[in-house]
Figure 1 (tube, one colour):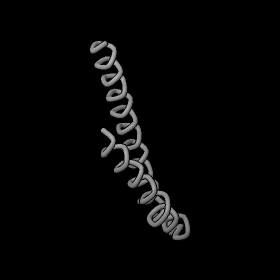
Figure 2 (cartoon, helix red, strand yellow; figure 1 turned 135 degrees about the vertical axis):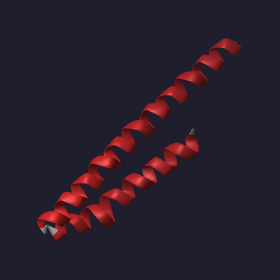
Figure 3 (cartoon, helix red, strand yellow; figure 1 turned 90 degrees about the horizontal axis):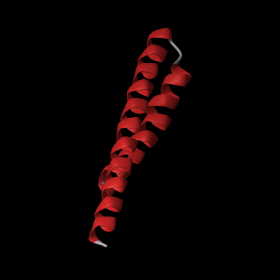
Figure 4 (tube, one colour; figure 1 turned 90 degrees about the vertical axis):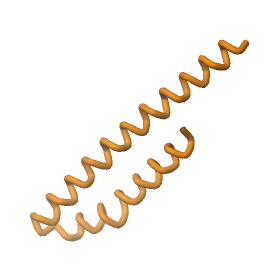
Length: 68
């Protein structure tokens, strides 16, 4: 029984760790898109990224980190 619980916890931990890494990669891509949008003068897209999508992803990342 203890092995089953330990295996379940390990699987959950690995899943959360994988999710955190995925979110970090997505966040990095959004930040690169933000930089590109600012350089290109696409301020509407930049503001959507800076004030919408990036903070949303940061909250999801924080939620995953607290669950780990």
